[in-house]
Length: 294
Image 1 (cartoon, helix red, strand yellow):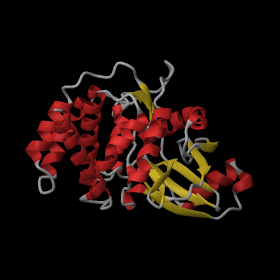
Image 2 (tube, one colour):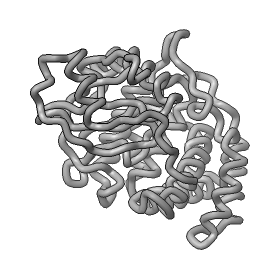
Image 3 (cartoon, helix red, strand yellow):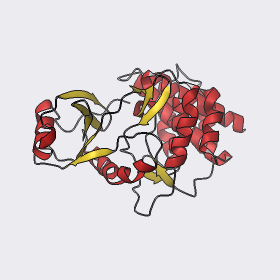
Image 4 (cartoon, one colour):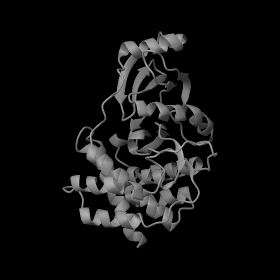
């Protein structure tokens, strides 16, 4: 698994021109490059803002969903989010929607040693988010489904991670997780909830970022983020704060934790070394959860 290459050229001149032409009152603010994720590039704008721009064509639709729906959901959530303060429009030079968001202070979760203090915070956040969406809520072909949809890639990635995990044990646990019946009541999802999309103040979760995969689907997809982000000793507190997780939901959560964990761990063996520990944490906690459920 490698970081996908950018499909659009995003440099200082392009981003500055977009801001100046569409939000001229902010054009005087200093602009500086921050980072690139799978889907978006981010630039700091002054002290108070961040500019988020899709770096791949597939991300344009995802950001459009976020621009439409996150402003509706954000006021109901107990943590700050990357909700857009202003929307940017496509241009001849740059063909995607883009956004200006508030700058949120904190340390990305992949750089933080996980602590138990965040367990009730994350559980409460997901309980607030996981409400039924309207019929017009977006779907996502890669997130929100049953963990069995990830079986082929899990099998391949476990092989890549053979030096870090007990492959037979992981695959047996994943197979058991996939035996759980599918969700019957889809809810709103973050869709890509892992520590790299969380901010921390010390060891305490303080914000959730990047809702580009926002969709309606199986809440297990997001609950797996708890297994990636929290020490295993705090998972009981996490699920208690969330409330209402039956055995089938827990099994699917474990399956998604394994699926997301092997992806992040593989990235951690390459371009993102900080992802290795959180990926392996998710795999280990997913396997142990399956085995506890019997």
